[in-house]
Length: 258
Image (cartoon, rainbow, N blue to C red; front, side, top):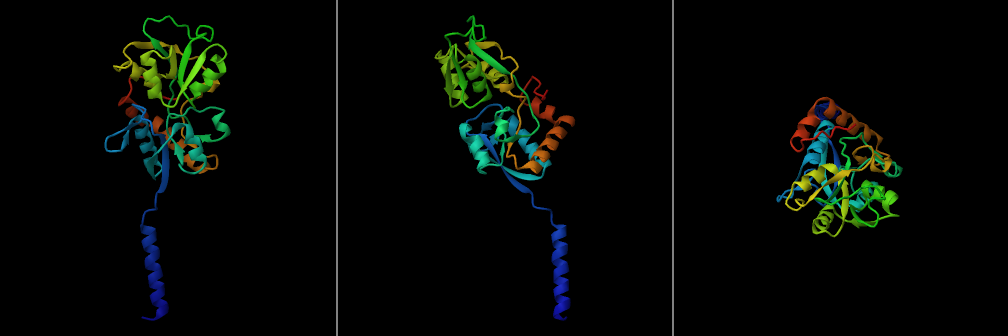
């Protein structure tokens, strides 16, 4: 066999092999806060993460044919981690707000939950700025709930910021704050726990732009194609009924984006 013919046959064989091989899926680093946020994200003793949002992001990654890995990041540094390319996507109950959209892009909302005030059972609290005058209000820092309280309550009440929701829950149960504001779904879960037994819901926060338009995946503004992929997968998940199937495993209330 002459060299020219041999080279041609090898070239054809390589080309055929490449065509037959599946395209390598893209790899994405999914950023979530290191603090567990049950039932949205829970770290198992094995080190693996599970929960509502983990199921959702696994569905999306399968749809867009991406190899995804969970990366733990401090919540207050999660946006800088995205913009500095340490992670590729934030998927951690981040509210879509105009302020955050100055820095990052968001996918279409993948769930929605209102914000709830929580306080001691039997306490008479009016959750307006005037009604909470002189009170200590607890909230997790670097959240839309914190932004809402800072704007509307800082002139009448003392706002106490916490690094994690677990720390705030402990102080609320111990009576070190008068009332707290948090997302309604984990609030319901907390109130059903032993630590939350002496507490109750005190009403929902009013609709406000600072509280966002739902929960979306955070992406870099430059990742336009990735945003389109996430949006399409989220829409399919909702239209197909798969979102409600996943939701049913964790909640008795409907979190479908409004």
